[in-house]
Amino acid sequence: NAGVTQTPKFRVLKTGQSMTLLCAQDMNHEYMYWYRQDPGMGLRLIHYSVGEGTTAKGEVPDGYNVSRLKKQNFLLGLESAAPSQTSVYFCASSYFGTGNTGELFFGEGSRLTVL
Amino acid sequence: AQRVTQPEKLLSVFKGAPVELKCNYSYSGSPELFWYVQYSRQRLQLLLRHISRESIKGFTADLNKGETSFHLKKPFAQEEDSAMYYCALLSGSARQLTFGSGTQLTVLP
Image (tube, rainbow over all chains, first blue to last red; front, side, top):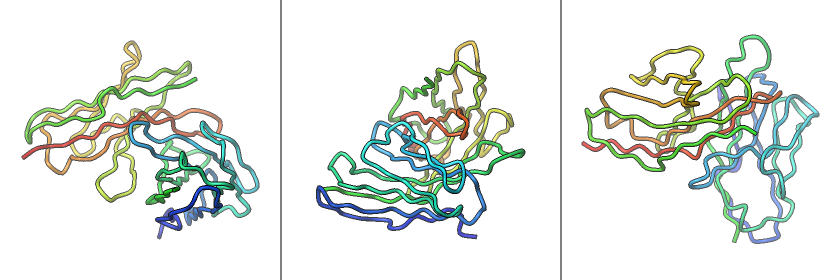
């Protein structure tokens, strides 16, 4: 049981390039989230999804797009990378419905550097 | 809007000493609070939640609604407790977490 898997784990981009981060979960969770982690700022929510085909903006959505075409996958895209998007990105998922304790299950993170 | 504040970015204690990581929150509804921990080179994981009122790895946290606090405590710190600790508040229709800025705990030998 892999849980939440993120690819790639590391990436270096030049300003203006685009890329996609993939998050895959095998726990049949309905909810999925993308956070970014920056020193001194904790984790901030970028976008989230409550189910296949649905997405919504979080606290810091600008410069990012997401898609949830399949229940198990949640993609985070950077259309035109900027140095301010240098960060560690975490994907998380959680279960919906009775028995939801509020616990989020996290991936290992993807470290992105934009030069 | 909800907010979680962790006033200490860094905290160092000696092994065997008590430790307290502070967390304050701002939320208009009934809060659901959590502590998450990130050990070196490991993924973020749940440490404890206020609803279950449990003790995990010797850590406890009590919700104080009057002071809007959820401080994490352990009477005798161990070196393996060294990690980044995040306080988090659950809210919203998608039950998303709002995190504090984190406290890096170092337990010295």
